[in-house]
Structures are given as structure tokens and as C-alpha cells.
Image 1 (tube, rainbow over the protein chains, first blue to last red):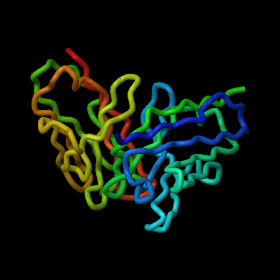
Image 2 (image 1 turned 30 degrees about the vertical axis):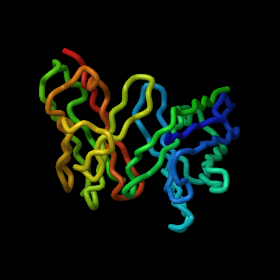
Image 3 (image 1 turned 45 degrees about the vertical axis):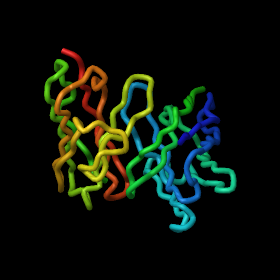
Image 4 (image 1 turned 90 degrees about the horizontal axis):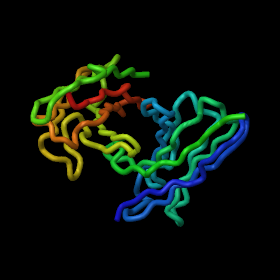
Length: 120
Length: 108
């Protein structure tokens, strides 16, 4: 079964850090481009960033609100995607979804999401 | 940044009706890299359409997408009870990838 399972969410103070993990199964992870998408409570979807497969260069790209604070990485040996979040702000409060990218940028597989709350 | 504007904000319809959702981009979406998603309360979004008009795996053929350039449409030919949900468009033709604000399809 194709599956993405996020973990690592929780409550953190402004200025703090958190590392999210996404465990992938059921597909060839090392060939996949992967992405993080977030959704603030009661709001719409917001793309956070993406990482290409190593075969395609392994490069990353980020949305402006998180650039310089968030880092996406991958461990293909463990079929795992990471999102390192530093200097967190209250506006980063959201459910964070791990997604697989197909056809250049559509998200065909989604995890259930993990909630990140940034509050003092 | 390409801004996507979806209209209308909310549609109140009955099962069996035909529905057309609009997604307008502030700039041309390159290569028709436009996707549509369905989201139900408490669930992750589900990919319906990619490349403006290609149905994702397992999506019923009552869902269809069309359009190019700056104007895109998602059509549901006959609404089923399970289709009442939020719908988002997303462009991935240029970075940053962006989503529309969503259209809610509710039961009349």
C-alpha cells in the first residue's frame, strides 16, 4: 500500500525549532520528488517547499515565507523525508502534509498530516 | 508569484446537478501545469486532475478539467453525495507553486 506517515508535530514556542519526519512506503522513494504543504486552521492550502530526487539533482525550492528558516532533506536509505523548521513564528501554526510529486508538480499522495502549534 | 482566484466562493447545489468551478490565474500557467484537489473536513486533499485535464488514478469520469493560459475549469457532470466538499486549484508551472483559495460545494 502506498503510504506517507508524518510525525514530529507538537507545541513549540516562537523562535523555537521542530523537525518533522515523513515515512514513505509502497513506492520507490528514491525516484520520487517530494514536497511539504501546510494548512493553517480553517484556512487554505499553502505550498512550503519541495526536494527533487537525487537522480534529478536533489535540489530544493521553498516558498518565500519559510525560505531561510525551513530545510527539506531526505534519507533515501530509510525512505524518509524531513522538514527542519527553525525560528518558528506563530503564523507557522498549521497541519503539515508530506506529499509525493508527480508530473512536475501535482501532489498525488498525501499523508494524514501532523499539527504544529507555535505559541507562547 | 502567480495568484489563483477561484470562483465562486460557495456553490449550493443538489445531487445530480452539473457544476462548473473556475480558477483564474494572474499570469499564464506554463505548460498547463494546473491541478485540482478535493478536500473533505478532517481529511487530506485528494488529487483529482493534473495537467489541466488529466484525471488522476481512480478518479471517476464525472470529473473533468479544461482550460489553458490563465483560465481553467473543473466540471462535475452529475453531483454525487460524496462530491460535496472543498475544491482547490494549484499551479506548478512556475515557482512558487500556489493554490487558489478554494470553492466550497455544499448541499442545497
